[in-house]
Length: 245
Image (cartoon, rainbow, N blue to C red; front, side, top):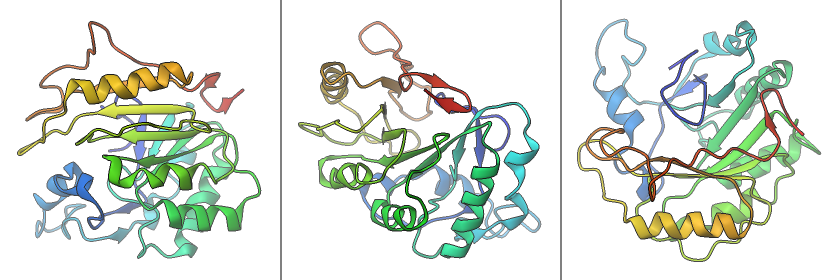
């Protein structure tokens, strides 16, 4: 984690919070928990406490030190809107994002209701360089999309990863970007190609940029990332580091 990232749709990760708890089926084989728990009990290691929720105030100002503009995935190893993250600490995270306006911040959560409550109290309009996303792994949690669309934001996106079941019909009005990917790691659940094609075709029909991250498998890159003979790397319309116009 840090100034470089192997995640195809971002440039860097920033983790002022680490650790989380499971909330829905998409969490069952969480890569972050698996990584962190390997180090539980290792003295001096950043994950000495495993995947227990941990605030890391010493990391708050990292993006301010990165002078080159980049896309920054916020809390790849946690969820900023976990119920045990104090609102006062979320304030500090957003204070930094507002100051570091030469970057694009990608804030992704499964806890869409808390995100909505917090942001609608704090902002009339979210700064353009802060993008909001929700994880949606199957049809049971599609309501997260409706909640996301209630928040005034310049870019709203869906991370449909791991896709573990068909989503059915999607109303993508108010959504500016869709990312899809399969699960990786031991016990990875298979992703049916028709589930992916259905989402892609709905994105095309509704003029929403589509990004296909991976098929997944034992390793993230096990089965590549081509869908029907090509890579899909679309970004939000008008995307530009530091701004969306």
